[in-house]
Image 1 (cartoon, rainbow, N blue to C red):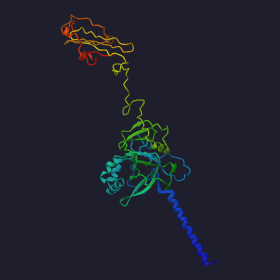
Image 2: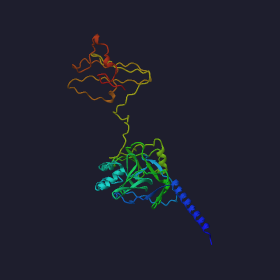
Image 3: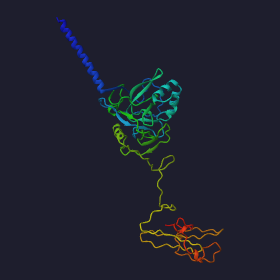
Image 4: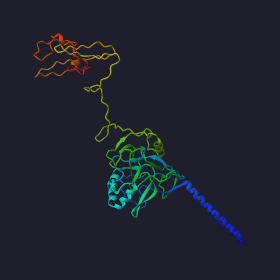
Length: 409
């Protein structure tokens, strides 16, 4: 028979052991585990959705083989301005924004709860939604989600599966989930590995989950990847996708879409590479072809004047009233361009001037006198008074300032 003292000692020891075990478990959870996070596949609306689905992407995640189990890990942080973070279809929105506006404005209580989460007034909800950009997640993304219950928003952490249609703001942060109309915010705590609940989808890996951080500056365009053919698209921020245009991939991108780890590396770069506009090989109506530089070899296109080599003398043309129309060009060194001067006689009223042919572009060194031409119909006579025999400084300084029709070659 056991003594009461021995029994009491055993009970006290057992109690202390249980307390110690409980404290150790609680300490381990607080030190290594994060908040509880609900895994949400693409098609699942989740608990207490705000509205009906406005998902217009038609995107379904690829069937992936199940991955081996991984230990919990902290999500990767990626800036919302990182090219390739999101996907979509060219000139097609992934979310029906007008319908989303109808859902919320039809129920003032829901609109008020939605506005409280987003930090706006209920009256500003339609304009706020139109200013968001429809995209598709390209990586499993952790967010702070919100359901609607008893007239107010209820917050919970969740991981949205890659392929989920969302609306993002001008910092690249997801703000609305289109499948349920829920307002979204960045996670409240992403510095520790989360404790997940719900059913994981094939291909889910804790090490590939990302958290979108706001871009350091407001962005006006988002570079996404086409979910159909994996080309790159630049999308103007806002719900209107008609201004989408193809662009070249960033310098760091490969032929396949980037992985979450590659996106994280690109996000950490001081200045992520900005894709350049793509130049289609053929032109067609509605495409965004870049203008090619003018072809200087095209006949009839003027060439841009260039500076002559050092030591060259700029040729001048002397025009004197009553002169013979002679143009004097000083000699130039051998490496200097020669000047071609063409003198055009003035036309008399009612007289048509025959068009010049290519052989007439270079005139003779002197023009013969024409004393028999009618008045005002020929060149200026040879007899020049002594006081006007000099050059006109106002017209002799530059070929382009001369009143005659002359050009420098």
